Image (tube, rainbow, N blue to C red; front, side, top):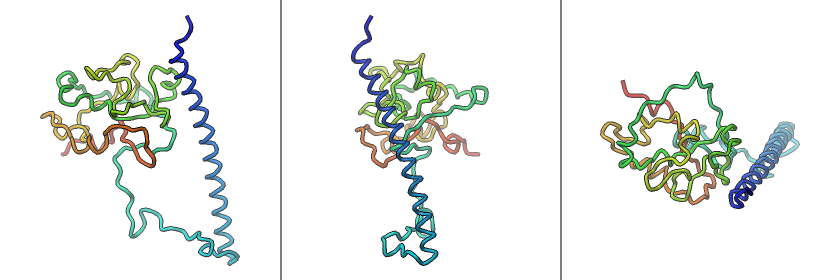
Length: 224
């Protein structure tokens, strides 16, 4: 049986995007190397009095985080864009078992908000091609314009690729995730964080960051 033409077109677009991203990444790396060499040459010439950086508009700016400036406070962890992101998982024997959550008892409250979190696929998951990745931000799992994962069933909020879901989905637990729950036991959502960071996706990230599904330790640790 011939391959479905739409599915084949989707596969070819993905392959084309992979090639384009790889080519752009190579060019970007070479530009960065050239800029570093040029900056070194300018520094050497300036030290010898052979060049005035100020006259060329090359005065160094005070780096972010130095005195008088603060680094921007970003949601943690975050994934910057534009960038190509591929996940590396620890060996299976080093992974902690996720805390058990009765999703059926909570789905009417959370509406599967975890399916609005983003994360990179692993190289194996990309090659397997069981789940779709975002062509505009390789290789994050693909989300639709409403902010949900493309594999989320909007009617019941179940996963349409549950048996083939990525490792991150298998190991994630919302227990203790303060981004999601203001009060886990009372099933009170953290609406402020969710509305700020997990709104709809118009496909234009520019210089923004996206919240990762992977939860930092400080957000899960219970107060002593």
